Length: 232
Image (cartoon, helix red, strand yellow):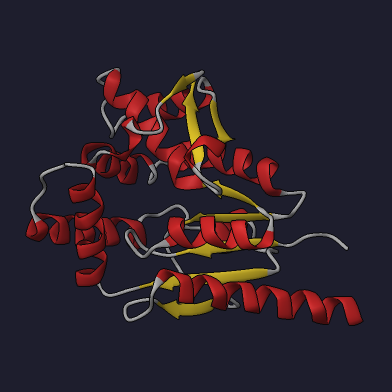
């Protein structure tokens, strides 16, 4: 029986990456972080001094860029190394500057067309957990299980702030909350592939839930669905 495609969408800071990695680990699936692709392209644009409003140039840059997601067993199960034109940028793409730039790059229709095609090729065989903003609505509308994961802006800002604190980055919590709200506005309001909950996606609010609780819920939903499919 074909393994499933599990699509996890949601706003910034909702815990999508943590959830997707853990679900992939528990189910023996491959984890694909689509947001890392936009971050890597944004990093390249920043390094080249390219305007993030230069639509045609950004699309050309995407077409001429190779982004590889590789399993990183040295860092634990479910983790990945991000290679940008062969260079490891796993750490470099996680800065606040790149995060904000990625949300601007992601509104470019040409860029999304190029990267969505790559995401489809990566996941079409199934047995993947893919997370992003438009996986269940655009990249894989046929995914067998779709999750829309969210949490309150305040909780998401605290989570993002703690992540940077643990890395030694000194960032302001209030500014982080403002950036979260700005990012939400861009993601929901963009013309191409806006952040929306697919009609058949399971809505999960993780505001008061621990990451492991959320992961076990998603695995239960997947296993129940697989069991029903097997009996048909």
